[in-house]
Amino acid sequence: MAQKTGARQQNLDELRALAMMMVVVLHFLGKGNLLGDVTADTMDSVGIFAWVLEAFCIVAVNCYMLLSGYFLCESEFKLSRLFKHYLQVWMYSVGIGLVAAATGFVPAAEVDTHYYLTLLFPVSMGHYWFMTAYLFLYVMLPVVLTGVRHMDQKQMQGSILLLLAVFCLCKSVLPFRLEQDGLGYDVVWYLCVFLLAAYIRKFGMPVLAKRWRCMCFYLGGCGLILAEFFVLRELYLRRGSFGLILKVSFEYNHMFALLAAVGLFGFFLQSKGSGIAGKAARVISPYVLGVYLLHENIGVRYGWQRLFHAGEIRTVPELILWTLLAAVCMFAAGVALEWLRSILVKALGEK
Image: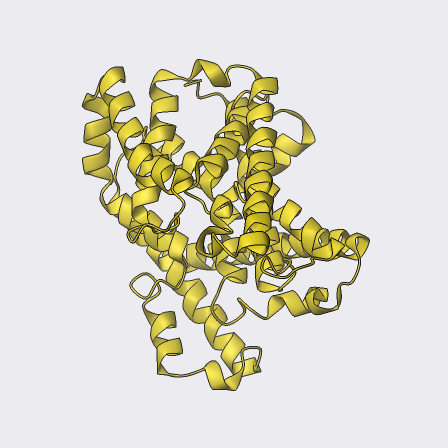
């Protein structure tokens, strides 16, 4: 599993591209108000199918965390890389945010002092929560890597199991909310998944040795997410209980979401990564982050869904069509914009 071949790199580039499309799907469904109301007595077919899509895409963020851990555990901390990523985030934050405000894409009532502060200080203000967590983790990388490289297999197993028990298992089985549960939107959960990926890179994981087994983990994890969701919903409708945890299985630090993500990660890890798809993924991989930084900018975060008729979808075929179209178009736009930005930065750096 620890081989560093070009084919294996292409495999994970494919996963990186797929995961980013899944992220777009999640934001289209959630912020486009397409997910069915879990507290309503009835849910139409569009709302139900939207939750099914949500279940199969919720693995995307954990897959990105696994990718980070898999590669960074063999790298070294570089201040230049930290600055490069911060500059990338800052350029998108300010650039897209100002354009959205100037063109009226974001409602004028939302353009206030807080809006501009969020643009100017994207990491401290949590403009992009994932990048905030990533950058803080990267700052701690020297400490984390020292621990990873000095622990033997049993020590690392013990640390990971303890972390997952506290930050994943407990919230997954207890019938109430934990006050310190960050739902997976924080650097603590990022660290848990990072260490799991580092363990896979360093020692391997026999259970992920077969692609069919990995796919079973992915499909089974997604199926369990849906099963728990609908069971809790039924209990809520009948007894009025479990209202606070109705959507707990859809949270990034739930054990079913992690299981599915590890399965999908293992599936691509064991793939050959050859062919047109692998080559294309390798070419666009350096620009994929632009997709996230574009469509999750505060200026367009709740508006781009209108371009794909999110509020007008009435049937399942329409939902499938517009969801796919949104994922492909936003992915292409983000990759193209990041490609142009990289050319601009390179040109400015040469002057």
